[in-house]
Image 1 (cartoon, rainbow, N blue to C red):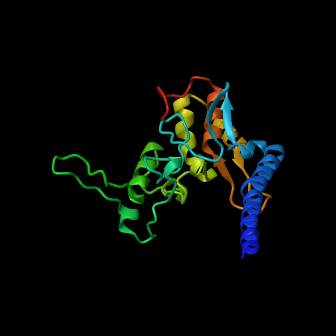
Image 2: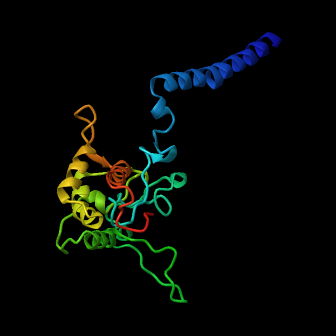
Length: 217
């Protein structure tokens, strides 16, 4: 019995060392050598300051910036509460939203902007007619709530607003957009996409301090 117990204890210790210490350290070391940027979160650094990650979106609302798709992660792009809405395509809440008032007249904290609300806001901020068809990612939230990309079509609808606010020519902004449009991975996987943070940083670098708004949030 003692021999069996000893073998069992030794097996647990050896496996713990292999899978809990040696293997993670080996993988971490290999990742740091081969993929150091990705292993450290694909962080974006400007002037010695970390401004974000290529993998996690940020909320932009100022008119001089391209805006990301809506987010269901808390108040928007909160990496601590990543997740989607879990609402089905026929959900009335998803489509029409929830708009209630408390007895004191204030908005109910449980209110929710549906697709129709997001569509109306998107058309208004980009000067589009009420009948304009827009890309689906402009009015729907991603499954993670952290998607850093939008479709090239979504960005194209915002181009005129950004150019006008910043005092750029549409041609100049269109060229910048083309530069930051990523193709399908390996030419076959996924869809073309635009990293909103990278594009907005490029806009700021093209004309430092010329955002067309006091700040962005």
